[in-house]
Amino acid sequence: MKARLLVGLAFAVVAAVAIYLGLLDSGSPSIGHEYVATGTGSTALIRWSPSGGRLDGTMTLVTLFGAPPNQATSTRSIPVSATLDGSMIGVSFNAGPERFGTLSGDTFNVEVPRTDGILVPLQFTSNSSSAFNREVSRLQHQARAANASYYQATTEVSDRLMVRCQAAGGRIQSGGSTSASSDCVVGGVADPISEPGTPKAAFRFLPSMIHAVVQGCQSAGGSWHYDGFSGYYTNHTDWDCTVGGFKDQVISFTTGAYDVPIKSAPAVSSLIGQCQQSGGDFVIDSLSTARPEPFACQFSGLVNDDLAVTPTPHFVTPLSQASAQTTPGESAPTAPAR
Image (cartoon, rainbow, N blue to C red; front, side):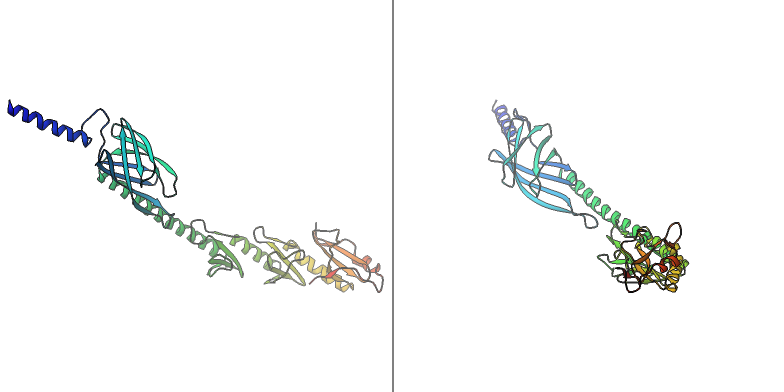
């Protein structure tokens, strides 16, 4: 009889301890000692133990931070405590206000504060630290893979830009002309590379277009050169093709357009010579009726013979007629062309 009483007393003590530790059902869901949660780019491990009617411990939070090529994981430990009321669990992080969730089986859901204060809902499942370590390894592998992918994409883009530059007869030059760290130089024209050293690296213009512009100049018998101010209306690119006595400015390396179509430049140059042989001056005429080509052959007096380039370059009035209309001693309000 005494032996049976001792056995019963021992069982009661073990049961009481087990209930206190959450190992047996005491009318409320049992609580484990280790819980693991996994979110997007993060994982957390809670380890706690009973202490004065509550649970106290630490949450280890591992998150991805940064962006490729410098993405890595960050680890921080946060004091955590919890209380149970039936299936309701209240969890406090870093002595902050309790966040309430529901304990169901071996899981509970609760909102976890991020470093920026934003609450993120996570589901914690009773698990071991080895499961947590596997999740940490997965995040570290994810960061390494993202960095490697970034470097690979950057290398591929850089190689493509090099090939395109060389195919246009250009060369890559370090120490870029603008905020870029390198340019593709074609015919003396520096094409800046935007966002160099990243997968987004790109030419501002197209090296092939610059090459075509330079080739068009040479095909027209012109000389290609830089001019700090070369526009008839405004300064567009600082680059000219001079054909005979006519400087034809490049308006855009994106479209390859000149002030005057480069194929028409030799004819315009010839007309300049005819204007001068007729006693006139080739000038910019802001009042030209033949815009957008603001050129004219100006004779003494108020006579400007406008130049049109379509369908082919020509003066609107035959030069012989225009020169016959001059009034000695007067001049038109125009500026000489270069």
